Amino acid sequence: MGSVRGVLNIESTDSIEKATLLAKGATADVYGWGVGHVLKLFLERIPWHANKVAATRIAHKASLPVPEVIDGLIEVGEREGIVFERVDGPTMTEYLKVHSDKVEYCAQQAAELHARIHSTEAIELLPLIEILTWSIHQADPLEERTRKAVLDVLNGLPAGGVLCHNDFYPSNIIVSLQSPMVIDWAIGTRGSPLADHARTWLISRMWPGRLEEMEAPEHVQLMWQRFWDAFFHRYGELRPSSSEDLIHWQIVAATVSLDWDRNIASMDQRVSFVKAALCGAEHPWLSC
Image (cartoon, rainbow, N blue to C red; front, side, top):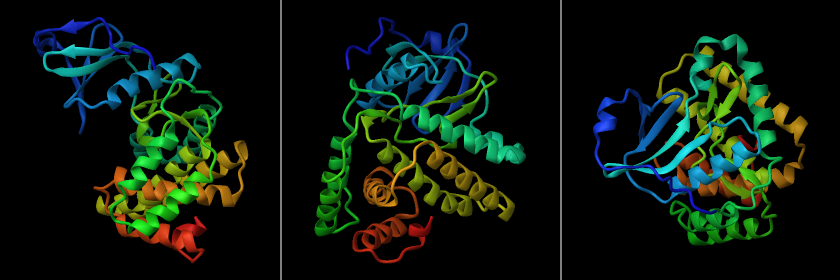
């Protein structure tokens, strides 16, 4: 992937103390950083930060709507960060809270963005299929024979070589004045577009559970159902695929999520989906 570590090395936190804190997240704080830039300062060091730089740079070089990496990685005291082009605006999730009349339009924009990403070669990035293989082995809620069956499914699928975001959903899209911008490329890889699409499908299946946890009113739940229906319809127009191919990737995505999304409440649903899909049994998600 080449060098991703920038030349900027700040030995003290003086600059941070003078910077404007824009947002606090579960994994990082975001500061205003000079003119037209932001610093994403991580709470802890993990290897995926370097991958985030590499994947974002590849997406930007391909003229996809992503914030440009200005410096990466940099040291700020004991913490690691990345300096990005500043992009102002709400996430698409936040935007739709006050613009529910734009739900179909936003869904179509998101689907078109995802299809554009899947038209981009990414030979420099890590192969997604290796990460999926490792994560299937870590899917502890499934017994070993079921994990082996999922690995057999994965081994029969094409590895692919296009850019995959692997966490593509409305909260990772900024609605800016210029255009929707895709953020958070930490697990950007090269792989099959259907693998990435199946990951987004899985997020859409887990979405209602999150809304219920937040006690979202019925009209909000219905709005998001409209969003996902419009999203998958538009993506299917742009990148048609067979239902058999897609369900194989959905089995893989649901299994991998047992490792990736351990803190999300739909664990039992994902386990039951994997088992049902492997043996051709009925499951509520299979009609979605």
